[in-house]
Length: 389
Length: 95
Image 1 (cartoon, each protein chain N blue to C red):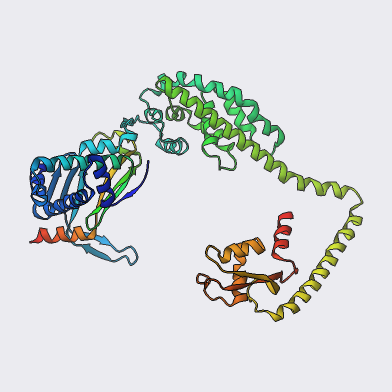
Image 2 (tube, each protein chain N blue to C red):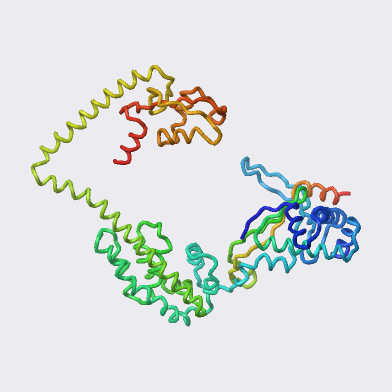
């Protein structure tokens, strides 16, 4: 797909290439092509072009409508509309990528809600999923089992591993219903993969197989021939892998959140806590004092320069000058000197630039030296400190 | 105005033989078709815009039988008339 935007001029040059005709002539022809369509519409209300389509003027009756913002009723006057219906040949040519799809009659009891979610996770290029709303879901169910059975067996140890690591999360539930019915395996497997963003995927599969296993099976893709079958195997392994990844991440998170809870219980048991406290408080005190001192000196130095009232930093000196040349931007400079493009406003303040979008070429810009108003650190130090925390 | 009348009007305007005009139109339509197949958008000033749009799949219900059908997604060529064309066709309809 090259989603180009074409103009009549592009069209004319393409036409000239195609028919090896003079370009100017083609341009003229394309223009009169649309002019004649317009003339025909005005005089006849209908223009039919073989192979292209039909332009028609449709009358639209007056109707009442409601102004959304005020709730007032008003009438839309009767008017005409230009409609275009593409010719069958053109319509089919445009729809070529989706020609494999066909309208399918849905059975009663087919859960379309579930289908929609399935659509989200499965890319549309798969023709098998459309056919999957099959007429005889019961008959095909055993066939479905086979390709899927391989995947769960292969992946099972991976899925269970995080359960051992983090027993907090209610993952064991997922294993239980899956063991009950072989048929229930599939919904249980599919659900968490469909919603990888859900925090506790284990809860969903636990409920659904019990409530409506019958509804789930027909809705899941039932391959009709060999090719989609292999296709589905691939997708199922992919889904399984995603599930496994999700579980690992969850396990990691659980382990991460557990540690800080355990630590204090350890320290409480030992009498060492009193010793620890003063040592930890002292350095912070001295640090704070040093920071205060630094901030004071910084504030005094800042008096010599124009300041930005609402910012986090004082301007305390000059790092150097930079000449504004083509291709340079204030953002780039801020990034270069402070590793933070948002600080370009200080360059503006320093140089009295009111509109940062308009900076004269070859202007000598003074690059301010910045110190944090509280700690007296430079922006780079602040960024590093934030990173270390 | 059917295809024949359209061709004759076009041939008169361009000073071509009807046969040649038809050939040219066929060429142009083939070119347009190829472009739209690629998903291009054609914008003609003071006329309108041809655009290929994707329609999502949907479930329709037959009102008489209550039968539900899943209509597949499709690509549709869409035409949107620009105000200039709308205005002129409106006036033409009145006079």
